[in-house]
Length: 265
Picture 1 (spheres, rainbow, N blue to C red):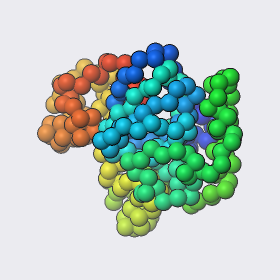
Picture 2 (cartoon, rainbow, N blue to C red; picture 1 turned 90 degrees about the vertical axis):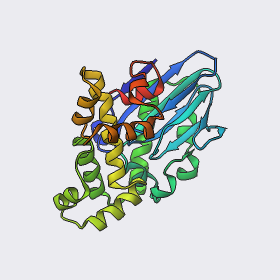
Picture 3 (cartoon, one colour; picture 1 turned 30 degrees about the vertical axis):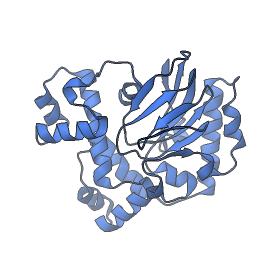
Picture 4 (tube, rainbow, N blue to C red; picture 1 turned 135 degrees about the vertical axis):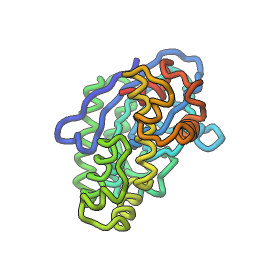
């Protein structure tokens, strides 16, 4: 079971969505996860997962923060799955924690490493809470954290929205001209607030657009490459292999995997 939930209007400029994944199957099953350009807070209220992010497996904590991930990685359940995730826009981690996000790229860390004592969220890892209760507690926590770390990242937020709205096809110079600040200043703020460059986030967002096109249209690989903004098919294949580890022609777009759940809106 995989479900998505909209955030409140007061927080929809920081939170993209909430999601819940539950699966009672106890059999360990490795799953591939593909970068989508968002950061996340994740709470396991079922059995914990193992993660293989850099070539070795390690068990995850119950409460996690994942910043920008630059390539695919693998997760594996150790029992029954039950988790809630808060998918956030790229700059929201910096706003919540007040830390330079470049130090958290390609990392999935215990939430306590950034947020300190978090009793309210720790309680959500226990059973007996409804999804609505978990979302309500998470949103109240976000509001408190934002009031503690009031950071001026308005320009970065606007830059990120332009990237998502254009499906990754806008460049940094166009964004800096639009915002009226120098590209160098914008790049510095962007890397600190998101952990990646404007160009790299644009690559991830453009790649993700492939999954939306595959969901809605029947087209050849050449058509898909052109419509998603790639100049040629070889560039398209290079990005696809980097982010998924597979050739486009062999990827199972219709398989019920975590990667497809997260990427197909």
